[in-house]
Image (spheres, protein in one colour):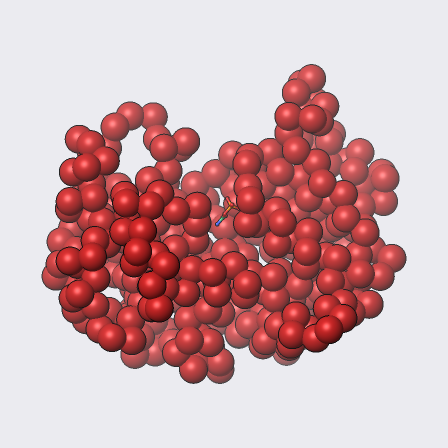
Length: 312
Ligand code: CP
């Protein structure tokens, strides 16, 4: 297929064919990471700006390393050291970056729609690195890639696989992007968590919902645990963390219910002992660090594809 998007702002916008195209390219770029010299000249001469208005460890470093591996020049900007603190608007900041000849802007922002807002106004490619509770497209792509790899589904056909996403769905951009990616590729998706964080309205996304974690653990192929997004919640959605863990945490006892080949995933950062037992997070069935490694290849693919499309 012919890739035509200069921006990646959401998974909801993508077709199944486009998702599979990115996964195929990710597979090619993953081989670069296995070489002695982990670098290709694909983006030589291009400049990428990481504009992170919210904290990040994995995503920011992953985009930075991905850009280095593609031979791009990289500049990192955090909100606290930028003129955003002096009242400059996001649009003005981004237009100044473009005036400095940035070719790609990777944006993390607390407002849903921030990446799309810039994408519609800039000639530079805009990649959404997480916008509020809306979407985190590259996280979903790396999660999907990790499932495809572990389940030997590199054709991107996930029909017959059952994925449980457990935790704070309501405030999770990771959940939203994963739901779109997994359902487009044919997986069955079940959401599980407290009714306050997993409202029935999410069924409109083509998923099933349960509030009883023990009813699904024995039958799913993948569990993806999400942390409680305290930074996006304005009130308490459950009585205590202890009660949350008792009802929805992947404890050692609960992990015994899982099928022997069930993948255990988490996008990070982990709250050990809350949504997942610490030993389970580090166990052989956990692919949490594989997700991080795969993120590099997926982000190389996304940067390569989007940067290759001229602005309209
Ligand atoms: N998964 C994820 O987005 O992690 P960071 O917040 O560390 O980037």
